[in-house]
Image 1 (spheres, rainbow, N blue to C red):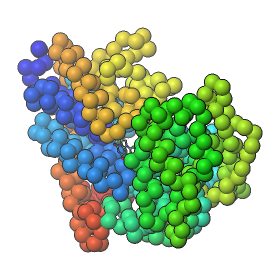
Image 2: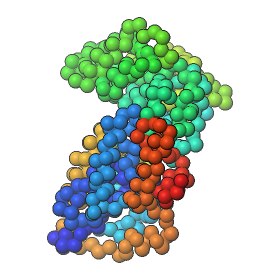
Image 3: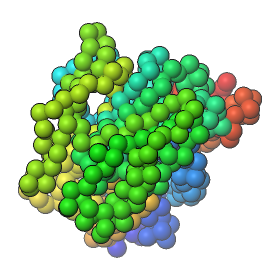
Image 4: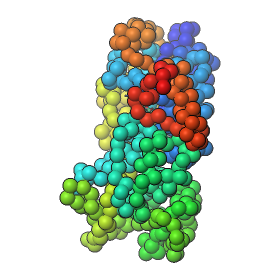
Length: 452
Ligand SMILES: Cc1cc2nc3c(=O)[nH]c(=O)nc-3n(C[C@H](O)[C@H](O)[C@H](O)COP(=O)(O)OP(=O)(O)OC[C@H]3O[C@@H](n4cnc5c(N)ncnc54)[C@H](O)[C@@H]3O)c2cc1C
């Protein structure tokens, strides 16, 4: 146990759930005989718990309180506004630490690769999510909510979140943490109809029943799905019997096949068996052409040659997420993850790359709930500590030296607490719930320095 006599030094890149659960596992599995430095490119910790989980899902947002305790452990430090690839390199980290865990997530949207996708008004759902969640990279994004119809492509939980935010009134979101400019923009929204579109059928929808049911319970929006879209082929009917989630989804969806509730300002149209074929428009989105689909004999989705066009002015695609490669770190271009075995990064020869590990979405792809990252990170940490036990690495320099030599304006945990307090104070001054997010870089970094 050469290294274990003195605390092991571990860098964790990314302070989302995976990174913070990894820090927690490092502390627990070494009985505190460790020093963990958690880095993030943002001045704020918690990754998608802050910038992905929908603002009206307050109980899930509260996971941040648990993650906060980890950052407050004396063995853990937070370094905000430090981006791997821009401010520090992989080699820098390997010079300063015994081991590095990359947990940078997977928040880049996949494209549909259909004509018209580049038109103004055709956007990645993640851009919209980033905007309403107050991500500083999206603070100045604008979306043309003067249109009456919007299409959301995808039937996963993220698509459901986006549909729900579009269908709710600004008043319903006032008590959440969305930035003031988002409330203002949503107040002016003229959206009346939101189409949620799936390439396959209801039995293949990826959303969870709890999320789906919420759509049916909105006071300001009615919802419908056509009985024709709900017809199940024998394989899907069997799945609905054998799989609880699928059965639950079908039951929730069937409740919407009747006449939609009257007198609501907005309507959600759930449409299955339709593949986006083309986004139509001159200079901006004016419509979405869909091809009707069916399953072929092998169970794969295929076009029927029958088309229809929806008169939508905005198209938001939510058809999958992917990680981005980190410079010098192996990357699998097919699965968009870092190749690994139990979190140990593997090189082109399949052998583990010494001292480098992954956790979370960059390790296993964008799946599971926040809690899934806990066992995932614990597995990585078990393997990391096992490897470290036999090794005699010796960091060449300290991270403090390195960051100082670059003159980087690092945000510490205490700095973040000032921003946290400023957001709580803002909510109070606006009489708006527990927190209102500051979304602009300058406002965030000023608040971190204790300035208004
Ligand atoms: C829109 C959306 C809604 C969701 N809603 C829910 C929900 O309601 N319930 C639920 O259980 N799960 C939900 N999830 C899933 C959950 O958020 C993920 O399981 C979890 O956040 C993945 O954790 P992660 O740490 O791997 O990635 P992330 O949470 O993405 O964290 C990655 C962190 O790395 C940082 N980073 C990235 N690149 C760099 C770099 N180069 N240098 C330094 N830092 C970097 C990022 O800023 C970020 O803070 C949702 C996901 C999305 C996309």
